[in-house]
Image (tube, rainbow, N blue to C red):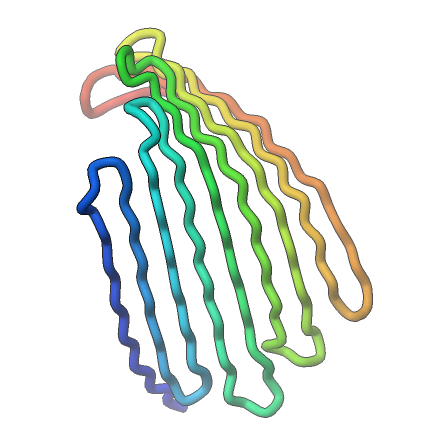
Length: 173
């Protein structure tokens, strides 16, 4: 069986202003079995030399054409704050909050909906030029609705890493 498909995409970046930028991308795909639309929007605003606010949204919609299949919708929204010690370049921090939604009816007998909230913070500290101490913490709250049952979970991540640059091409950690 052949499933021929055609895709078309269009992207745009707006970089006229020194302290902010905006991006968007739209992609459409047509095939014998489904049509897909993907849209991404992004925005960054530089508050100062040290800090920037970032936001991004990605929407993905699949329209299945088969009678025994439903549609599939995914949306991911992120907002973040980046801080870097501009003058000394010793510390950088990125914090993010993300919301994820999915409604999957691809298989009508096992249709499900999922929501998740994720928060994270990532840090790099450079006490010396060749040494980086890296750490991160993340927490995710997720909820799944499937077959008239709702389940939820809280997941957390802690990690750390020490990176030493041996030379420009090699490092160890």
